[in-house]
Image (cartoon, rainbow, N blue to C red):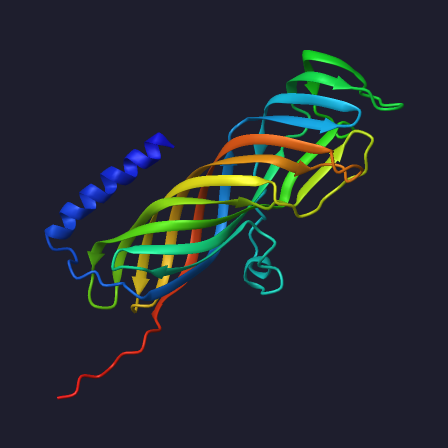
Length: 281
């Protein structure tokens, strides 16, 4: 994250010097609205995952996970009835000044624990007739299907507020340009976690599980003043200390922290909905 924020400062400084050299000094965006929709691929750092319940309390260390992008086909990605199945992004924003905007949106990522990996495990399990009962002291544990399936696949929903600084890279003419945007964000995690833990039945439910923070940078192609194509890279940190696991007891919970990186492609619009008043000669 330090590298990302350092890059933000340097990028804004460099872009400012280019603007002074005449790329597009009249960068007027105030009072414009924008929105975009698209899809992402994401990656996650290893994380320690803790599980707490009435008859168990243990931690799995350095658990690996991956995303689950839906294989591309035209019907899934462009059919209004199925476009929410892949890993999607939706965001709307408003320019509070010529170069600064505020936006709200959701990054619908998917987090899938890698099955059958070996991890260190510490803690205890003492479930009646449990097949995984015992005391663990950093022993190697294989994450088999009958022990744990752990996913945020419907999904890892990061609902955030973001601030964006915008600038021009190149102005082809009055209607077409290449711009950039960059900035931080903060938000809440509302995952629908699919969890099958030991002898308990599979459980999934939407739940406010934690918070996240992020920093992003993007390139935006603007065509005919209003149509946009955006390519974006986002890095961030997620802390979820209240993940639902079994549904058997309100005290059954899981906790984890991890870093994420996300690459997104979206299509969108920029519009000015303010009323223009004509000058009276």
